[in-house]
Length: 179
Image (cartoon, rainbow, N blue to C red; front, side):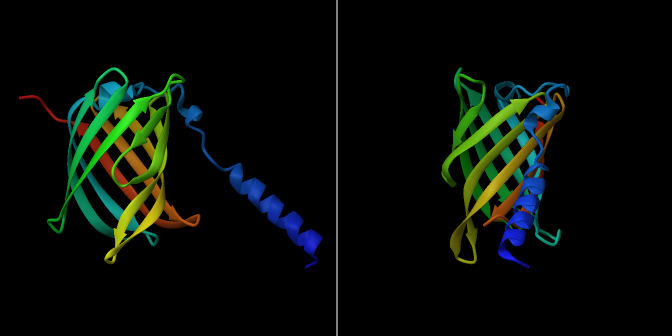
């Protein structure tokens, strides 16, 4: 194939693929509306799995969470317990920006996470430092969180490296019952 034809073909493929991306604004009319600072305030519990590229589940976990909102920043303290008995802690700090988006940090997040809410959905993107075989690697995370009921949120995360699928995380978060 001649170079100009190859370039045209590559441009077409890239434009088609970029057109496949879902916008968080497609969920603007979905209910119940997700108000991040309200849903994540208080005690929550989560249950999830990590699947490798093939779809095989390779890790299971539960997580106790406690969120506090001070009027501008949500602090979400997460305590993970993995099926093998190991534990992990992550503390998110999500600051609401003047335009309603969120900027976030956590100890294992590289740089700043960026989030946008529309309707019942939060779309959050960030780079995460992940332990792999005794060292760490940085994966890009494309996080989609959907409020299903006032008390239950579903989360699907795609983790990629160099644009290639590395893993997926499926997670359910629910408010803990009082009493």
